[in-house]
Image (spheres, rainbow, N blue to C red):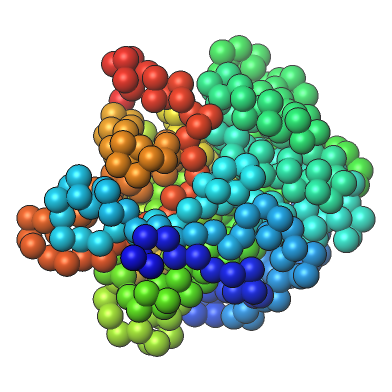
Amino acid sequence: MKEIKILLDIDDIPKKWYNILPDLPEKLPPYLHPITKKPITPKDMEALFPKSLIEQEFSEKRYIDIPEEVLNAYIKVGRPTPLYRARKLEEYLNTPAKIYYKREDVSFTGSHKTNTAIAQAYYNKIEGIKTLATETGAGQWGSALSLACSMFDLECVVFMVRASYYQKPYRRVIMQLYGAKVYPSPSEITDFGRKILKENPNHPGSLGIAISEAIEFVIKNENAKYSLGSVLNHVLLHQTIIGQEVLKQLEIIDIVPDVMIGCVGGGSNFSGFIYPMLGKILRKEIDKKIRFIAVEPTSCPTLTKGEYKYDYGDTAGLTPLLKMYTLGHDFVPPPIHAGGLRYHGDAPSLCLLYNKGYIEARAYNQHEIFEAGKIFAKTEGIVPAPESCHAIKAVIDEALDAKKKNEEKIIVFNLSGHGLLDLKGYQDYLEGKLPK
């Protein structure tokens, strides 16, 4: 029965983050300067990020030490997190597949986002920064950074995508309780926000616009830096604490998965979950074929329908150009409830691995994913975030495929967050009011 809940001791928490860059099948295409279009240097990024995070962004070291202060903060907010066996879901599906899920929903703010928020707040603090500005979609990243800033005595300014600002008011309240200033984006706080609102006073916003506003705020405010919740290498690096814990937990029960699944918006939770395992494959330490499935919404299908090319990370074109699968930096997705997946591009390292065939991708609509969330809540007792419901839908499809083929498939997925502040979406689904 030890498979029901696989726990780690505090002493088992990883002491290093894993950096996949030295293990990639080819070198990551360089970031390009937004004006000169030439490869950027670490110096070019100092206006936005502290030097320690820039060093991590370009590092070729396979493992990077986690500072003691960060480890202590991780433990305080709930690390290490448990791995569960989804026996009730397996019974409901009548599948020979074994299903396991990593519970990142148990953190103080209810998602994986604290893994990088704490690290980023710490590094900014030790370099004397006073204020961090950021964007947030559904509010999970904004909540995590607000908490991290409160832990390290930093001011926090959050530009929240306008559609989510009104869809999810209680996430805004959480940020404000932690001391953050939260603005609906596009906002009246920045020149770019005012420009967008003048063109369309009812603009629903996008992560690209919110990023532009946060960057403009940083450029105009002394002793402020920008903090990003996904996409860049240092963010994915911090999230690999998830996948390293999963490796230890799977070793305890002596299994190697056939499939690993996660939802993808910018790519941080999925990459943090799979990279330690995928790294073993890239280094030829595992010869078993493992499928890695990235799941996104049909309304924002970056991997499944995007173009692999250089694009800006924000709408205003203030960020470096990144080579990634993109729908275009001016793309404005519909205001779906999975606000954390409404980004026009994806992490460059993830996109390279997808392009080379190491990762699969699929997309689902809102009706499909909320139905999956309902099934998971009924069977496992946990209400998952709409973002995580995308992963659960793929898990259910894989389990049913195993049933059809009578295969004893082992499926492991990342439950990236809980949905207790997303009940309006579930209500709309149950009442038949949810648009696709």
